[in-house]
Amino acid sequence: MTETTWLWSGCIGMALGAVALFVVGKHRTQDEEGHTILHVIVPVVASLSYFAQATRQGSVVLSDGREFLFARYVDWAITTPLLLLGLTMTALHGAHRRPGLVAAILGADVLMIVTGGFYAASVATGPKWIWYLVSCGAFLAVYAGLFGPLRREAQDRDPVRRVEYGRNVALLAVLWLIYPVLDLLGDSGLQVWGPTATTASITVLDLTAKIVYGFVILAGARKVADHDLSHGHVEPAPVSTEAVPSGADAHPHPRASRTTSR
Ligand code: RET
Image (cartoon, rainbow, N blue to C red; front, side, top):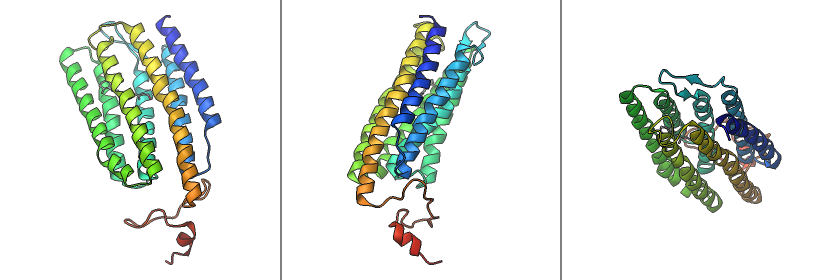
């Protein structure tokens, strides 16, 4: 298969995956609705990025003759924060809690992708490896957030959420670890293999990290929603939540929140 065929496979695979995730996704609670929306948007963005790459609108030829597929990094800059947002929603029972922590994890992630893009676009060797190291530093900061404070938050929640978070973060961490290795060995880095092999392996990995991972998350979100609904402490998705003062219980019983006096 040529590089372009791989790119078209990514475009079509992501589009079909988005439709499948949309069909299986449910909206019974705000949490479940949030996960469904996130895991449909992610492959839609990726499909468009693969379209741009396949039609050569999402790439430029660098002065050393390599092709820099910048649409790949634009895709990752949008989709990786969305995937992490899903994890924070599970750990925090809604991403509105600890906004500073959520912003730190998502901010480090965007920094990782942007500096990774500069690495891939570098022609001069010195700056290239500095960008790579900075990107890896930001990657470590993301992992520190996920396995430190966010995991502690998940452990303080109900057993269903705790198990969901543990499984999801482990799967995400393993899949994401492969990206810097592939990009290092590919044509942006040590050039152990060429552009076609790089694109082929990244396409397969992307489909796994977005579509397969999306199915796993939506199945888990269904279990969490079943648990929440059976305990009766969630509001249905279309009902808006009331503002919660800092430090107050963010999930009072629906009836209790209605009787709160001003
Ligand atoms: C780069 C190269 C520089 C060093 C590091 C990288 C990490 C990239 C990652 C990408 C994840 C992408 C996903 C996309 C699909 O959903 C930029 C390759 C650390 C972790 C999950």
